[in-house]
Image 1 (tube, helix red, strand yellow):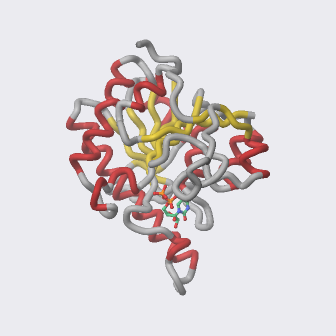
Image 2 (cartoon, helix red, strand yellow):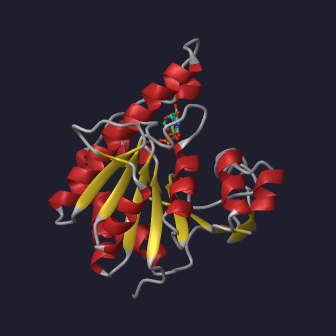
Length: 235
Ligand code: UDP
């Protein structure tokens, strides 16, 4: 199988890094997810990664806390995940750079778009931490933003479900899975793909998003090769 895309932005949720524990980092799981990423790099694909932070903290589920502070904590959680994914990829032989939207110069490079482009062009994997650097946003929006900035061919959202459904497959056994769905439909029907800020950013900039399941991490490589898995959300 040969890759279909030259440059991708992969969004990994925090939850996907937690394995069965559902919280924190399961490093064996992270290595499992990183193996197909290495395969993509070896096949010549340029890979940028945005990591979530939900395995540690989500600002929106922080009860009575000040939302901005809670979101700062969430962004720091994504930095922990970025370092974990970087370590796993390095152990597999990838050259990796972590860039964060909140400066933490002792542990990672600051996010600089042109520098990220140079890294990608030289075959390094770039992991973007701290989301957009701003509260009230999600890492899905950060993924859409970085995907546009690095001119990725596609944003790949690896999740716990195998695509986009017209209703919740957990509660409705007749839920129908889409092969392709428009951003218009996602936004109008409020389909559970990504938040509306992220969906609007992709829609306005004509950035296609592939939503697929990480249950089998090899799906990352299949997706990069254009295999018909998951759901494509497109203009
Ligand atoms: N976050 C933020 N701004 C961003 C991205 C993330 O404030 O641009 C915070 C927010 O609190 C969020 C948390 O970081 O809940 C973790 O990100 P997210 O919930 O998107 O992670 P995921 O669900 O993908 O693991």
